[in-house]
Amino acid sequence: MADVGYTSQVHEEEAQLGDYFALLKPRVMSLVVFTALVGLLAAPGSVHPVIAFASILFVAIGAGASGALNMWWDADIDAIMRRTAKRPIPAGRVQPGEALHLGVALAGLSVMMLALSANLMAAALLAFTIFFYAVVYSMWLKRSTPQNIVIGGAAGAFPPVIGWVIATGSFSVEAWLMFALIFMWTPPHFWALALFMKADYDDAGVPMLTVTHGRKSTRTHIIVYTVLLAALAVGTGFTAIGGPVYLGTALVLNALFLKGAVQVWQRDETAADADGYRVEKRFFRLSLWYLFAHFGVILLEAALRPFGLGGW
Amino acid sequence: MPIRAEHEIHTRRKGRNVGVGLMLAGFVILVLALTFTKVTNGDFELPSGTEISGG
Image 1: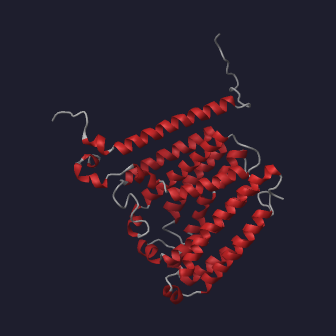
Image 2: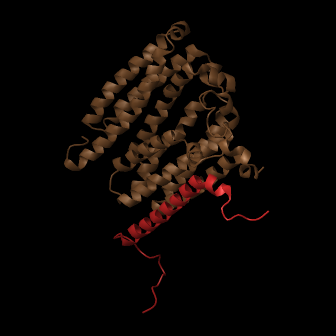
């Protein structure tokens, strides 16, 4: 088995460095880097730039490790779903064992190095996040409950808290508000995706809400979570990480997001099929901008603060 | 079968090996920079009970 890579018959399928990088889910990593950086910079006090850079890098590596472990565990269903069939393991370029070893090694390395560069609390939180994504979400929840996205969303919500703890060594309400923003945003974001990628989750037997409770119920869930998210996002504007710029942006974005959710909720499958899920796809794209903009203005408020402009 | 100094696997995996080498070098530099930053930071303290001997 181990000798397969040394024969000349498998040249074309041999993994390149880019395939191992793909195991780390670079798109998820970029979101983790961004939100962790916002958490770090929005926190009171200052961190030496070298320590901040190294710490965020180790958080990114930890996120990559959990991505590799997720791909190792989910290789069987990834092969079935159109969206994931070209990932390195189902495509046959990387052996499952390689992904497991890479994930475990990078997880250990990232946690240990974060403890050295920042503090033990941040390292413990990173370790818990990796465990939560790889074990609680991937192994326990994803294939067993339609609430997989809701609870699993917590894993993606931890990075700004880790960033905050890197800077301060402790937790605060503001850090948990950033956590809550991502936590509440995740379900409508993924359920919108599930609405127009229906066949994928059906075929793989993943109990997405669209499969277990039907599409009408999913649309209702989207609007309920969006209303709660909008209240939370606008409310955050009145805390220490908010400010006039944040509040103005949040009001506009949440009005748009609510409008999108209402449109998704009002539609039925006939209308959605007729126009190729145009409204659902637009809502999904808006959700990406929504999160990016909220964290962007939190960062902006923090950047303006030294000049006496940011915050209240 | 004679041992060739340059097996074809060396050329085939050159990209991978160079990439891993560069990453390891980057890691060494990062740890060096981290150590330098921490030691030269104003609040750096040796663990209690540690004595600097010599001289």
